[in-house]
Image 1 (tube, rainbow, N blue to C red):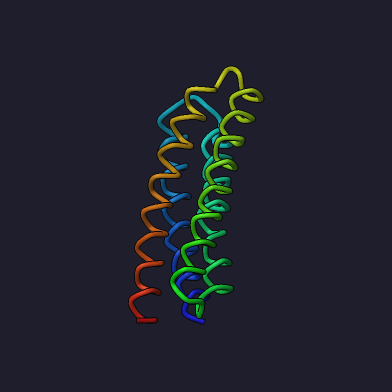
Image 2: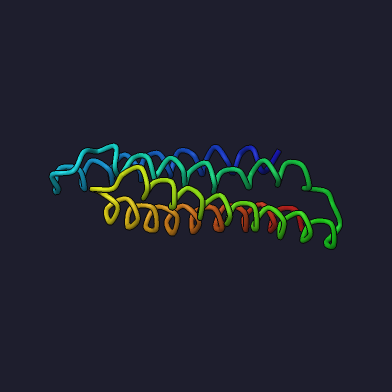
Length: 125
């Protein structure tokens, strides 16, 4: 239950941040807004997927929790690497903008995710 509420807060904050950042960057550059929005959406899915895991293993013991969490981290890392490689291959003329946008988005969304996941773990303890 706490993970669902935290995901809703994560989604609201992330959407506001994403729309504002995409609008500002798209108006400041000549690149299409999709170049900034696509990496942001990929990062949103990667960061938000951890909340699904938190709903599943919320009551698990520490050993099980860290095993699932470490496994999900590895899967998300591989997903991020594949997304960057695919994005760079498909968007040849905008590869630098895509990569920088992806890294910035992932950093911001991972920070927001850690804050909300920490609040879940504090309330469960």
